[in-house]
Length: 362
Image (tube, rainbow, N blue to C red):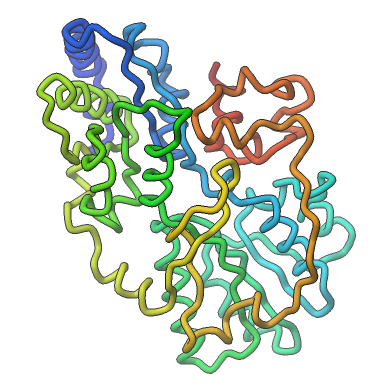
């Protein structure tokens, strides 16, 4: 299949691994590379890439899973909203199993009778709102710049149609400021970043200036084994040449300018402000909040949520895993009480969560 088979070619992969070994020998010191995309985390685990690399090349996983980085307080707010009368609460499937304070989940609320629905696209909410005129349809919007322009488009469409009973609980987040926070984390030493492919289709490469300004290497890579290996090969080349820039390996999908129409749409509906990330705390400029002309679609404005005393899950170290401080094997709950069938934290819920990937492939 064009654009797939050639990126799974064993001979090409072996050639890249040979090149990686030569470059790692030339560098002669330990190099840490972080991927900031759940699809990269999955690909690295699925193809066993971590175990193929030289000992001095270390891959760590960052906060690339939007389900995982959703703060426990935002989960608790979602639980409150979903449990109100005359509410149809919608979201993507993974969010149903993410535990809030005391382990409560949307899945449990649904089993108890709450009208909570899994949708494939936020566009489905328009039809739901029109079909349930006496109820308020709330969409819990999660995701990075890949999905948030779609939500902006749906909001504009509902506004044009005059739909009054639809709102969004926005926990969307922007990736570049989170990468800057990782760079400034005194507990981390990262030499290069595998930048997310899907997000980069939208935002382009200029948004990653914080990486090159800090003297780190950066490559936007795709998700097949050859993509990832070539991305690592290119990062090592930058380190050797001491020429740090944002290179595009995933050129069949990503362009330096991104998708300006999608980003303009996003900026029309939302503005940026600080937002809480699990494990990373509050990061400036990462949250997407409704501009005044679209505030009627803001679920947090439509419903008064009481102060909720959120408590992190005891023993769960998802926060440190999302920062790349530890691996899942270092968490006391991993594979003991925390499994995909019984997730103790969000990193085990999503198929792109680091713990779920390690559980399946390591």
